[in-house]
Structures are given as C-alpha cells and as structure tokens.
Amino acid sequence: MKKTAFILPAVAVLVITAMSSLFIVDERQKALVLQFGQIVSVKTEPGLYFKMPIIQDVVRYDDRILSRDLDPLEVTPSDDRRLVVDAFARYRISDVEQFRRAVGDGAEARAAERLDGILRDKTRNVLGTVASNDILSTDRAALMLRIRNDAIPEARGLGLELIDVRLKRTDLPPENLNATYERMKAEREREAADEIARGNEAALRIQAGADRTVIELVSDAERQSQITLGEADARRNEIFANAFGADPEFFEFYRSMTAYERALLGGNATMVLSPDNEFFSYLKSDTGPDAAE
Image (cartoon, rainbow, N blue to C red; front, side):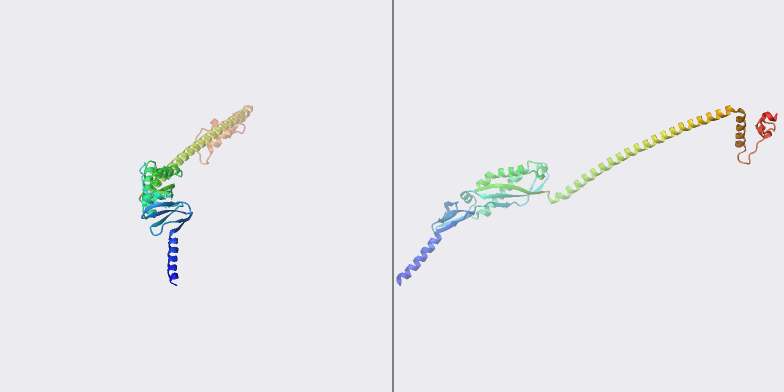
C-alpha cells in the first residue's frame, strides 16, 4: 500500500513531464525552441518534437502567406498633384530566427508595424518620381513592382519575404475634389462653347451658300425669262410685220383703232382737235382717209 502511494505520484509526474516535453508543429507553422529567451532550435518541418520541460519554451509562427492593408497614404507625385493611395502587401515569415531577433516578443504585431513603415516610405519615394496620370492609369504594374523591389531588402532584414505589393485605390484628397470638379466642369463648358461656335460658323457658311444659290437660281430664271420674253416679242413683231406688210391699209386701220382705244380709255377723257385732223379720218368714213377725200 505504501509503494502504491509513492508509485502513483511518480507516474503522474513522469506523465506530466513527458507531456510537457512533447510539442507538435503542423504544416501551417514554423517554431522556435527557446531556452531562457535564447534560440536553441528551429523547427520548420511539421511533426512531433521534444523539448526540455520547464526550462525550454516553444514559440510558433504562421508559415502561410499573410496580408497587410496599409492605412490611406497621401503622396505628392512629380507634378505636385496630391493623391491619396490605398495599398496592401502579401508576405510570409521566411526566416524565423531573423524574425525573432529583429522584432523580439509580440513579433507579428510589431513586424506588421515595421513593415507598414517600410512600405509607406517606399511608396512615397516611388510615386514621388512619376506624374499623377501615370499613377491614375490602369497600367500601374511597373510602379507596384518598383515599390516591392525597393522594399524587399529591408523586409528581408525582418526575416520576411515580401511577395507582392498592390495599389488598390488612388483618389484625390477630399479638399481637392471640388476644385478638380470645377476645373473639369470649366473644361467641358469650354469644349461645349467651342463646339457651339463651330456649329454656328458651319450654319452661317451653309446659309450663305444657300442664299448665293437662291440668288444665282433667281438671276438665271429672270435671265431666261427675259430671253424668252424678248424672243416672244421678236416673234410677235415678226408676225405683225408679216401681217401688216401683206395689207398696209389694214395696218393703218388697226393702228388707228388702237390709238382711239388708248385715247378714249376711261370714259371721261376730253380731246380738243380740229375736226379735219387726220386722227379722226376713220370716224368720218368707214373706208379710211382716201374715201373721206
């Protein structure tokens, strides 16, 4: 009975000691074995490992690719047009020993803060050498690659492998939006005014061409009408001449009748002539001047 009282506690101590000596590293992790705060072993492969109980500790780190969103960052491109940039980075802990030595306890949060500082500094440096139009364009791959490549050496000093840096969004600062809107509005109004002026100029040119065409058509029509009227008058005179030439006496009679019609037109005309005036020769006789004699 006394042996059992001693054996059971001893077994319990052995079990507890054995359990505290074992630790597991899965495929998503890397681990450091620390003894009094000093690194004594690095475990990079998944599996079951042993450590000295009590005096050794195990610190695990995520071996997966991690993401980090940067706070909005204001940059000043080479054309002094300020922009607000949102970026994010993807990275992984590649060297856990270096990582531990660089950032110490609270490693992951502290490393993220230091990585933020590196990325913010490199983003300002790279984007400060180009124009804002290059940043705002869709072809920004070269700029993002430059930021990543410039940040790689400092990230490696933290034991980090910087995989990618991306610019998510680039906008104008809020205080510049209204000014930019007004400038864009003024530019569009100027373009509209130019288009209206060109349209009015084209309308005047078309109207002038139409007016000139109308004048030319009317002038040509009037000329043609005068020509036709002249030809008609000539034809009429020719007909009269032929008719009167065939019978001169009839011509004299027709001319006298026409003169009477014009002279007596209106009904209240008064003519004072001598009775034996030749003008009344056909009123005295139906055979004309010769019969009156």
